[in-house]
Length: 243
Image 1 (cartoon, rainbow, N blue to C red):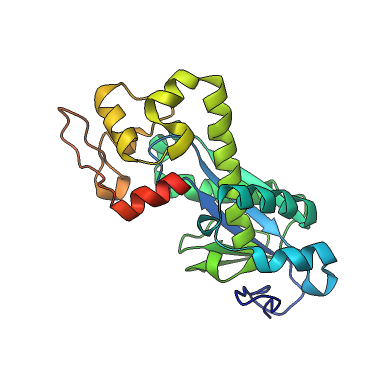
Image 2 (tube, one colour):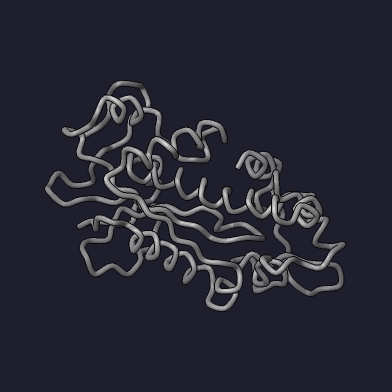
């Protein structure tokens, strides 16, 4: 079943049955600094949509395709209209201790645990599953471009991540300015990489990312260090500044 009120349509269900489905997505996986955040969202069945939900649904899409203003607006509406929503976070120290895959799965699991209503099926963006004894777990490549609930989760995950960054910028404006956190949100932009070569990392920097561990771990080379370096393309740089 799809939404049809606008040209861009996303599926409202994975399987047409009675199970509650929760969409799940993450934000901040590729950041040099800050938490990895995930969200889980259960949307109401389409037959039970209110006028507000029917108006919102066609607007939901992958959070990276929305402006910050729209993302914040839609996040507030999702929280109001969802059957349930939850957010899970893993901080840099735990990510360093256990790895990115563990952090990603743990953030998923914490987001599901935060749901006040438990789903019978999880729809997870990407290929990485998580442990869930309450029902089925489905991983879906490009899920945030396919399913309404995953798109909603991507919006909440990104807003939760960026809210954390914004709060930090208020608490520690000197560090925030040094690394450009207000604009890069922890991603490895040119200013961020240059600052890492000139200054000691902050405690929320991911050591796996800035001190090596191979390209898969996001190794970044500081001056005098033997580790690999992430190089962002111009397109990546523009995208990071929009995130």
